[in-house]
Length: 167
Length: 167
DNA sequence: TCGACCATGTAACGTGTTACATGATTAT
DNA sequence: ATAATCATGTAACACGTTACATGGTCGA
Image (cartoon, rainbow over all chains, first blue to last red; front, top):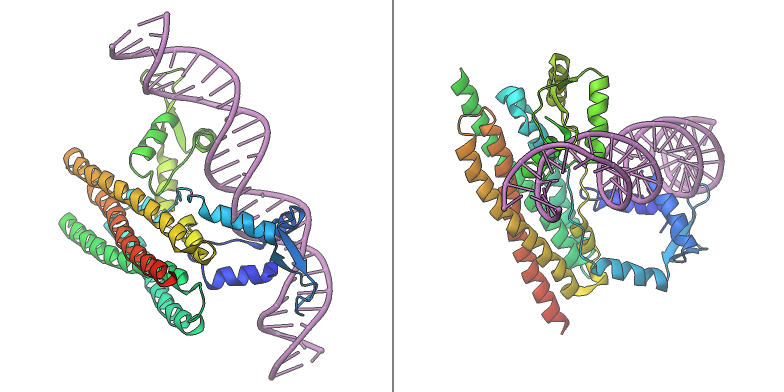
């Protein structure tokens, strides 16, 4: 694929748990080529400017597979909504609730998108070896969003009670 | 608090969704002091070497509060386990399952820790204005871990089926 | 012909971790 | 005394985003 393709693919599939910018992608392609892990494909199709398409070679596939089998690093997350809620006492229940509602909205919309993505997946990748894995990942996203929505609802009720108590 | 205190507090409470290293903390304290948002407290208690304790002043509290009321940035997460699972077809169901089991173990242990943290919270912060907010954050962590464990179990079953089909 | 989109690339900046260097205090 | 822990700080490096610069292709 080309750098542009990679970016598009990421945005259209795993964008909600992984992202890369062009500023990462293009220099990385350079490095991978210099390291002999990818090779440029000549007949890379038309498109804009000077499109350059690459593919993994044997060495690259070997490196990919060995990376895949390594244990994942502990994903250290930074969750700003939680951080702000942790300081909730500094802003009061109303302001805290605004954060929770915003988070709920985002996840609600995301859940809709996951559902249509799941339909599309079943249709378009029916025979693909990727199907079971992509479904599992997507299922994780849907469970996450559903869980968050429940938590938001519970938290909003709690914050409501807190506000009434304060009056 | 001192830089050291801040690091300890983070590790003991919000470490699972937010972290900072000393390399961030000490330079930040410098900058905050230069910007006039925190002030050094003279009687900062003993301790090692040259302990320096700070507290927020009025200006700092104002800045904190205005930051708290701003909408949270969309937390762009990088979830390596999901990324590896996304490439599952390159490693097969067994290797993929190893990642899922590892993730399950981590969350299982985390869930235990959250439960004891919740008990401690109810005991030690019973009268604190922070209680409802800290409980909400912790509740989010528990729901997350429980959700992940369910997803792992479902995914492991699916991967098992996949492996049997392949035989 | 013009706008949307395809497409590549770099430089500046900001963020964050790790490794290293240093040394005081306290409990055993 | 000595180990654990309290404690501060910097430098090198790695990572990542944003803004900018550039220009080709294709359909209306």
